Amino acid sequence: MSPPANTHLAYTPPDGGWGWAVVFGAFISIGFSYAFPKAIAIFFKEIQDFFGTSYSEIAWVSSIMLATTYGGGPISSILVNRFGSRPVVIFGGLLCGIGMISAAFCTSILQLYICVGVISGFGLALNLQPSVIIIGKYFLKRRPIANGLAMAGSPVMLSTLAPLNQFLFDNFGWRGSFFILGAILLNCCVAGALFRPIGMAADPVQKQTVKQAEKTVKEQPNNSSVEMVPPRAVSLLSGTEEEEEDKDCCEKFNKYLDFSLFKHRGFLIYLIGNVLMFLGFFAPIVFLAPYAKHLGIDEYSAAFLLSILAIVDMIARPTTGIIANSKWVRPKIQYFFSFSIAFNGACHLLCPLATGYTGLVIYSVFFGLAFGMVCAMLFETLMDLVGAARFTSAVGLVTIVECCTILLGPPIGGTLIDTFGDYKYMFIKCGAVMVLAGTFLFIMNYYNYRMLAKEERERKVTEETVKDNKHIRTETEDGNIWAKEKMQDGPEVEPLTDEKEGLKKEVNGKSEV
Image (tube, rainbow, N blue to C red):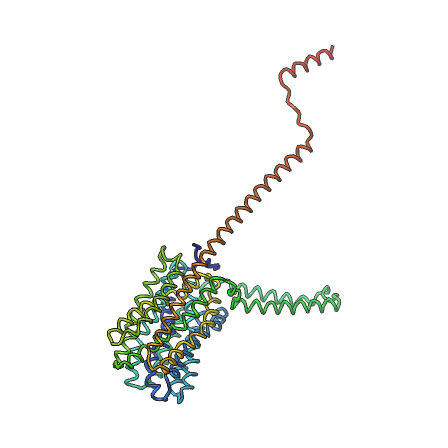
């Protein structure tokens, strides 16, 4: 089995220290990013009655918010590469607050789409991506645990926001609740302040080097050698410079979003599986509280189902992170992730059997466990495939592709509810899609691991062959050198023995006589 991808970082992640403060900040940012679009489902029934809309129309609020959160991934990745995680998260927190406060004054469902879905959703996108990226810069060996703790922010926030939203609605209505929630979302700015930059010490030196190079280039036209260049040569040089500028622009764009990842086999498998998964990932949690109200359960009990789901989710995420970090699961984490997705789908397929509050509580427990398992490994498996150095681009590309199915998932579920007048078809659709996605990922990851092992064996054989050829070539060269030296030195003189020395003396004696 192939080892996790190399980080290729220019520094060693501390795996602790201030990194735990970063995990706390990511806990808050990720918590709001994932929990908020689900928690506002508490208001859907009342907003639907207020504006006189259908289930599918009201579901677009959460869908647009989730799709903007994921679709804004590439923009967030570019901003993180350009400015760092801290200012991006702070700006995102401001956008979230502005969007929700503006939503308190909306007079149509279309205005809610813009304020809640687009503005606040994009603010959450600027919170989600930098929080995930900064953890990969601070942690390496303990990264699964750190990701699990940070991802636990989602269930904590959901278990808190679900009853809080119901309390706010009972006392202030949905408009006053949105106004207060906008103020609460400004805490993302505080979380972003904890994201201290790391591994950026070389940047000022690089900038100074670039400035010196530009200054040297500007001074070069004053030299007499440049003045003597013919006009045709100058035009050729200018054409070459334009081509280099175009190439530099492409390289700069590719630096922010590495499109070569679409040639990466493991990345493509992950992307296809996740696109299928998100078609049924968020709809069940969006319609859980409305489904309970549809069965005649009171508002607070319906909201408490989300709290139960979130509490189990809160325990499942760090536990999954610890299990995923073990020496038995870490090399096979892609299989564990595939099983989690299929288990999630199986829960949705069994949900229509729950016709009372007790059955919905049991469903919420298992759904929370499966949901926490998937979320805890969602980004860890991607980093395991592409490595930390390409993770920023990978997150951006994955989220922009996934936003299409995230956008369509809840509205398709709402359309099924409007068409058949029953929630069970929505749960069956989501369960079937997720079981299919989990099966696909399991089979394709098995194929990917086999291919990686084969490529590793071929690489070792190639290295050994090159080494042997190099050894033979060295011996041949040594032999040729020895033969050449022998030819240059002439025939080797045989040393004289004792008898030959005696004869030589006799001959010399006769010659003397």
